[in-house]
Length: 245
Image (tube, rainbow, N blue to C red; front, side, top):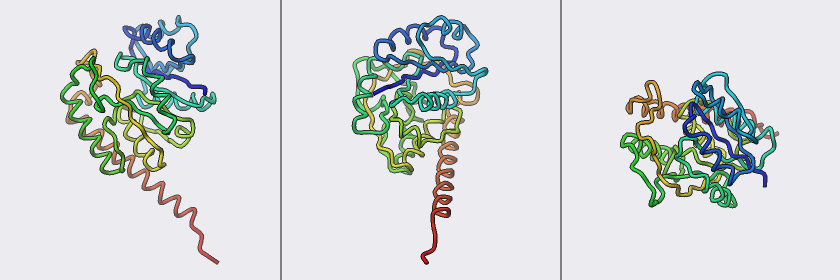
């Protein structure tokens, strides 16, 4: 099984070398998506041996960076794509656990709320509350059984990526992903991962720094994704139906 570990980065000069050093222990193929970094990240990546690199000329957003990873993984014929963040929240040593769990799932997603770990740190109150709210709404509306809708530590089988059509470029991208996964009937499994917030003051940027604005944005993305799936289903029924002769 060929698998690729993809890491979106934006202004991560303080973390990227350490994270890559650790990921190399568990993944022979590493893709970094530099999403328009303006600090020293790009220069550091240029000196990193043996990595695959996609560079966005400007910052396009978290969802856009992951979509670049999806496209790259499919174009280069990897069987599995692992995604993880570069801010120290995800432990590369758990990559083998993700891969093992794919035996009976199409998508394996880390959950920071599935179980407790000794190294857990407190989650920012607003982030935990919004996560709980949105996760509950996704489960109720789309018949899923998630405990953490936003964890970026995931593994995808190739055929799962082939069915996803991600257009959301921002932080709400995982919500579009879950709606599409539900429509496609993909099997989803969560595994517990530590809840690590090394920098609790780390900001989303812009209006999303306000918790109410962020919750409204997430709900808008969820509603738009649901509407897109309804339109797609209607289009399929209209196109596929033929009257009996």
